[in-house]
Length: 145
Image (cartoon, rainbow, N blue to C red; front, top):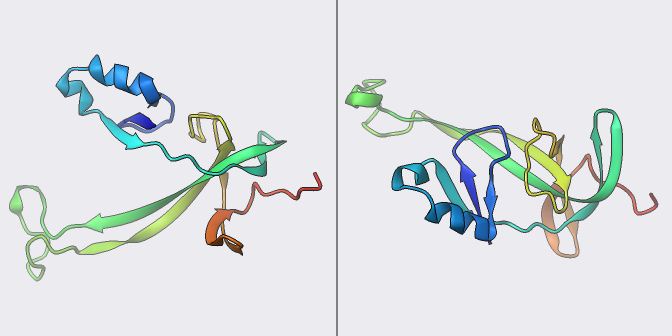
């Protein structure tokens, strides 16, 4: 399946599956420029405890890891060089700058934390029978609960 995502922050307004196709068919070319069409990722749900507004709810949840980067190129708009010692187009800075993990209950399409669909979490690298993988630290619960 696919998801059609608007080029803006804030969560919500994503369009899924057949609805994405219908939306694209109804848009003019200029309108389509405001969206990204992506393959939908179907992560494996895990039992989790999510805390929101001092209330904890336990259920099947999925996590999403976002990695942020910083890139600064060697030229500014208009071709003016930023640094005379830097070759044209050569990166001045290109590095990882942080991460964010969001957890949300399985079956929830949207993922915005501010919109109330997800909560923040922390990554944890674990090694299990399937090999090393990244999971989420904070929403994990024991099976005893």
